[in-house]
Figure 1 (tube, rainbow, N blue to C red):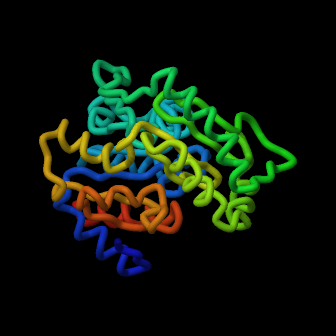
Figure 2: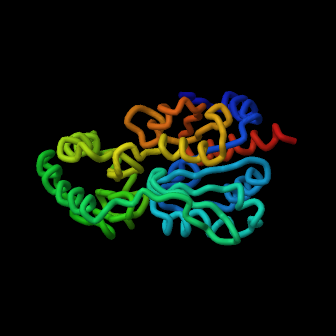
Length: 269
């Protein structure tokens, strides 16, 4: 894993020019958690889509991607969007732009029975770790995203500042919840995600799976690609990509990503 700053980021970005495929995490990498993609990032990504294949892998569902990300790329042409792949729910699904619409490429939807099992285990796991529910929550705490069940401690619509405060004070609570759920749900994949979330998907479905599926679809090698994310550290929701052997860059803020993409585009001039 590369944790870079300043000139090192610029140097690393320039070295990525030969890469044909750029994978990005969404929250914390391209946009703040559940916040809309800003205009500067949208312009940078449009320029990048004119040169490279781009995939965005995030924990949210497709509707969240639509609101937060795709709606902000309205200026992109159909040709540019054809170079963009969307992989919601941590790579459990994939969409690509064909005939002017976003079409589902593959889907690892949980069955109703699997969802029922997952939902039933959360209360027990939360009791096991002596979880104290926050006094105020915002929206659904336990959400069905079809291919993923997501627990968000403050609810899906919590303000970013409240989520960041909760994360600073959680003291490893989500890792404890992850461990408890893994005891009850050994046949599923459980991971810490975002700022307040824990996700559950089918076994083997994670961001490494998403990377591998796109490379397979594009008939490409892992050496052709790089993954950029803010949670590549041990326990982070991007860490799984190391299983693929892909090159990576750890960013600490959305501004780091802008710097990398900008330098990457400069190197291509």
